[in-house]
Image 1 (cartoon, rainbow, N blue to C red):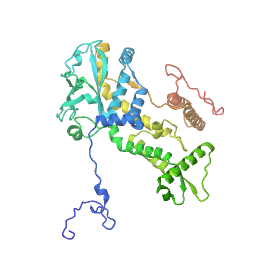
Image 2 (image 1 turned 60 degrees about the vertical axis):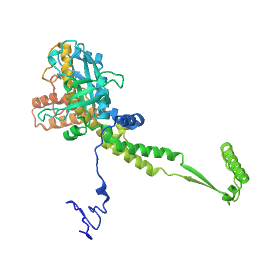
Image 3 (image 1 turned 180 degrees about the horizontal axis):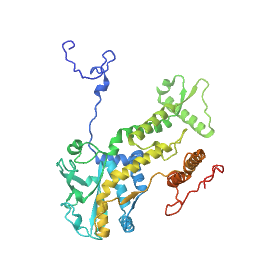
Image 4 (image 1 turned 180 degrees about the vertical axis):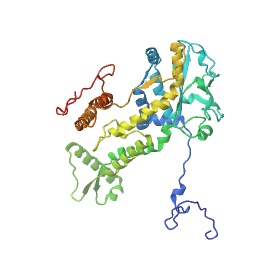
Amino acid sequence: MSNGKKIEALDAFRNFSAGFGDPTKDKRLGTHYARQRVNFRAIDALCSSSAMARRLSITIPQDATRSWRKWLGDHATELEALERRLNIRSSVYHAMVEANKFGGAVLLPVYRREPDYSMPLRLSDISKGDLVALTLVPREMVTTKTINMDISSPRFYRPEIVTIDPSAGDGETPLDIHHSQLIWLDGIETSSYSRGTTGEGWDDSFIELLRPQIEALDSISANIDALVFEARMQTLKVKNLSQYFENAEFEARFTERVAAMQTLMSSLRMRIIDEEEDLTTESFNFSGLLDCHNTALQTLSAASGIPKSRLLGESATGLGDSGKSDLRNYYDLVQAKQQHELATALRPLDEIMHRSVTGEPLPVEDHIEWVKLWEPELGDHAEAALKWTQSIANLYDTGLLDPDVLSAGVSGKLEEVLGIRHDDTGDFGPIVLAEPDDKTVE
């Protein structure tokens, strides 16, 4: 109570002398976060006009589909041929870009027959040669008709039935599609409540999440660009300048004189002025602005999870490993995204493809192997091999281990450490250790 007025008090850190926690003084209490719904036109305009926004939307999809997967099993060749024929890799890439922009994307398998898309998919109806195309449906054409409210369902608060309206005013009939008929690629994961109440069952947009950082970076870049034209400014001090503008004739003569001075400077790179006039030159210092730009870029990199060197497409500078660890950590995250999120999303498609090729269900065991995104350089292999062989030689010199036991261990670790194979079978053959006085390993 203060002068008969009630002041709201919160159970938090408060310091009345400094104003912390005081609603009348602490400006932080006015900060709040509001959830924004995706505006398709705004996001599309942002990615079309901002080069950084476009790069953010395509970088992870590019890396996730750059080193593609390999099929395992007896029908791997036929399945990979089907992927190439239907351009599956490109369709998944564009769907991931769409999901980054709008919080999700859907791929529609097209069959030789005409199924009832409004009903749940029956895998037993898919026969050999049935899959003929895979179509990316633009996000703005997809609207949620019903949401799954079954709390025991894996798709709780997800779209149950969606409506695809490709007409755009052309009079075509909208198509209702059951969720099992589509291949879903999610956006940024959000809470079930937010997804079901405000997002119509869709996730958050990756670009919308980064929009404040993108706008900050673009604004700083635009201001630096504008200041480049004002980096050098000259000022000419003229005695009694205001008097020249009191008479039209004097004003015209003064304007003509200034134009002549500019002409002489352009032709001869010198300026002629009166003895009583004073010409000064001022230059703008960009050092502080560059720090602001680098800070904004670093913030955007941290928020997106993409290293700055990958965003800019250049090698990292500085001491140490020159950014190798950052890139390796990033590629490990992309690899995890492939093996978990992307593999899970494409599992229904894999089932459809396998039945379309073989007419049989997809095996329960692993059927896909993702190609590694990061491979150590030859120098890294050589350094690891040198340290490893020195350790083996030192251990052998001690005589603490039986040569046969040490030989078996060397055979088992050779491929792991050196990253190479002795032959196509992976069999290195026997490793023969020399006598201690020779100190060599054959």
